[in-house]
Length: 227
Picture 1: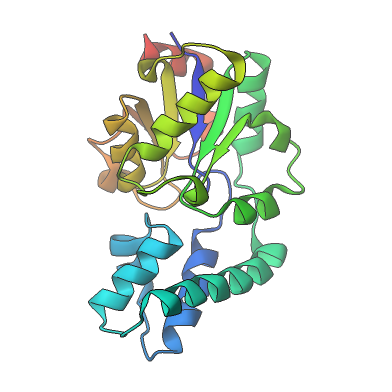
Picture 2: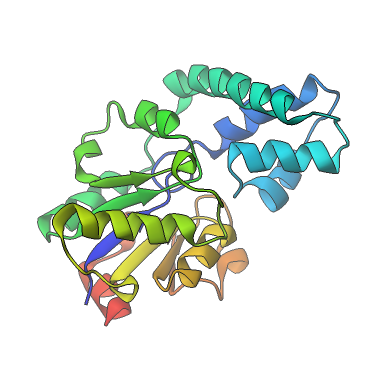
């Protein structure tokens, strides 16, 4: 039985993946490293800021110590916030889909590798921001996707909030990357892919269903997947 839908954020709710790439690459270029967009999407897109900078630091031998990595995370956030205030937009079809979930009393949460402050910034003007009962971010977990920690924590928080016993199999997860789809499956949930960041052929086999826009999904679709 369908009980909850848990959303990834970047590339699912907000068209912000390109902003994260631009902000990160601005940081890397200061150290003489220029990550091609194709490489970022293929290798680093599913990472948290910490995991991304640590990986590039290692892959490109940038020589940053832990303190320097933390400094770059802070500087990336400043750059990202400036971009998000002017460029970030809610993806078409998201508001309509969330409206259907609210009308049908489906529990709604976010599980994202972004920082909570980034999400709050991009949701400031969204008419549906209060629909999300729980928001789990990179600030809340030790391991990012494809580890299932975030999705398990989101469900735990939903259950704790209202003293319920929703099971993983009663949850739909909306994701845009194979990292997220793998995390949802590892948590025992039902992943649906949206083709905002990757084409369908790169997500096939990892999702219960693939759509181009979230408002293509119906309640019948969700209930059937969870049945």
